Amino acid sequence: MLDKDHNALVAMAGDRELCILPAMGNRHGLITGATGTGKTVTLQSLAETFSALGVPVFMADVKGDLSGLARAGGTGKAAERAALLHLEALGYAPRAFPVCFWDVFGKNGHPLRTTVSEMGPLLLGRLLNLNEVQAGVLQLAFRIADDAGLLLLDMKDLRSMIRHVGEERDAYKTSYGQISTASVGAIQRALLRLEEEGGDAFFGEPALDVMDLLQTDADGRGIISILSAESLMNAPGLYSCVLLWLLSELFENLPEAGDRDKPRLVFFFDEAHLLFDGISPALLQKIEQVTRLIRSRGVGIYFVSQNPADIPDSVLGQLGNRVQHALRAFTPKEQKAVRAAAQAFRANPAFSTEESIGQLGVGEALVSFLDDRGAPAMVERALIVPPESQVGPVSAEERAAVMRRSLVAGVYDKTVDRESAYEILEARARERQAAEAAEAQRADAARAAEAAERERARQEAALRKAEAESRRREAAERKARKDSGADMGDIFGSVVRQTTRTVTTTVGREIGKTLLRGLLGGLFGGRR
Image (tube, rainbow, N blue to C red):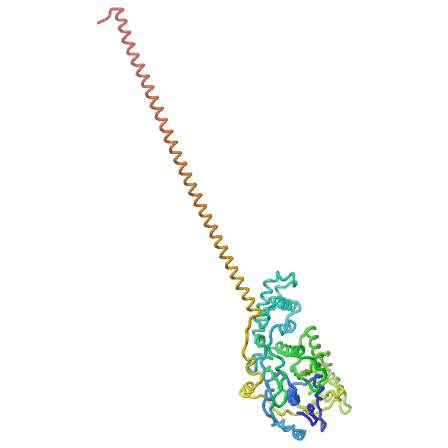
């Protein structure tokens, strides 16, 4: 709620009002305390106060309790606290606040999406938990996609691009350097894990226009955008990357605003320790840069965590407005953390800050805000102002009714899938497969023609061989017949000649015998 001067009233220390000056609202802040000490109520009360100032608010609802901002409250313990602090005189009254529900999975709010390209390789490497070498390969994939004009919009685009880079790594080696096959495989496995966690729902179109987070209602109150994070907290890496991406988008898209009389937007980062657990030096440097410079865009960041030690010192030093709820210190390590938390405040001689941290009750806190000179005020022990809206969640029906009345109703609900890397690479793959199939058909046809030609040549050779064999047999037969006819003639001639000689000899012998007998007979008178 607001005080009489329209400052952001946060707590009461006796009869003293502890307020965040609107002009200092973009100097960032820190809300810390153990579980059950009242951080969520403080968060809700601050969101109402900034909304009443006309400042839009973004916050993640990790427990499901903050949806009560959409319904009037001010009953029960909240009413008791308001009466104790005499807030009725300042206009405290039960009321609802303008709320817009968002959900990465699209179930309890309007779908909150971004594209793979807008997320970028640095944050995506953090989301996929890649090592330095694997993150380098992912960055190469983004660079190759940019150079080739391939849009990376959703997860199937990224999967196709990673597969393409792996398949064509030899072709890219000269221009982009060595691409490890093992790293490509590791990225693909990480993408599968992200899909199993439901993270693929976060990537796609229409992507969130961050200007839709900077809206006010008809009464001039800032819209409180609430990200449903009950399911999202099951994937803490995705949760932290979603919020960090939003901060990066705000930093990159909002123009310089200089010193404003009030913030353009206040961003609450609940469970902030998830952002810094195992963070790489490069990403931490990015967060430091965004935290330092986003103030000039008119955006205030308020980290919410259990212990100030959860926040790196380089970031912690930039958080001027602080609310410290109770911390319990039983071990030496916890006592050291309490001591460090106490030393972060400007000491108040009226009490011991370190002792007070362990003595604070529920809804009580140590509070120190920046004064009009930008210097930290002396720490005060105070009671947090109760919310005017309902403490606790609204029903599913009330949530649905709020979504129907939302300024962005129907804008992000239907997914758009335009041509991007997946479609282009798949088309190229189909063309390549068709070309390979056609080439294979041509090769098969050529091989078939060659086989047919070889068969024809074989048949012709066989025919020629058969014809030659036939001619050889015919010649052999003719020669055989010829040779057979000459032999018979020789035999017959020899027989005739022998017979003639025999006959001649015999006849000559007989004739000679007759002539001799006649001659002798004549000589000797032997004729009869």
